[in-house]
Length: 244
Image 1 (cartoon, one colour):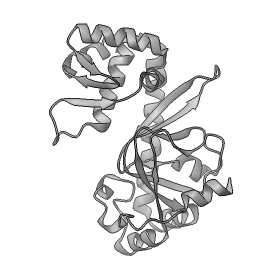
Image 2 (image 1 turned 30 degrees about the vertical axis):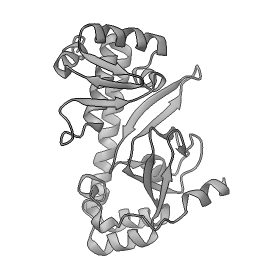
Image 3 (image 1 turned 45 degrees about the vertical axis):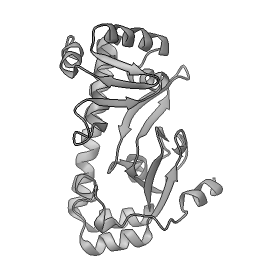
Image 4 (image 1 turned 45 degrees about the horizontal axis):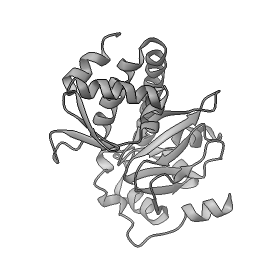
């Protein structure tokens, strides 16, 4: 455990400055004062994770808050059958582990890098001090918790009510909504393993492959290796809403 903590706390000369972070305006820290950002920048740590590397483990205790600077992260847990369920996707500017940190409980899920990822780590004492002193940040945190709860409840309903084909369409649209950089291309493409896609949908890998083949035959998506390209997002939207 201490080896893992020391690994987290490694400093890097390439660490971005909090006050100049390109993603701050879309993060939990958008309402921080300049002096608070300077203090965070002094106390935070910066770390790089390779694709597939665990950022934190389900069942471990949190020592601070993670904020994604670059890359893609999945937050997942094992169900009663020992199968992985991806419950959230994170991108640049998103925070990780905040619920367990403020509740002072063990992580209820694991965070794993979907590709090479860089993240900042703010120790718990600094985060708690910020929440105590900045009402706007505390309010933003409460809003974030409420939004996460609502999304979790909606996901549970969809998992129970929607057929797999509709859930797959919804999962592809979720990936697009989370990671599409419109300034780079009109079409959205993402490299994702079929195992991870199945863990988002909540089904077997073989089932995902079968329905992806149907989508390809219908001209809705194309694929090359692990990369999926969405060709007709409007069709996916209609499919995803069939049982709403």
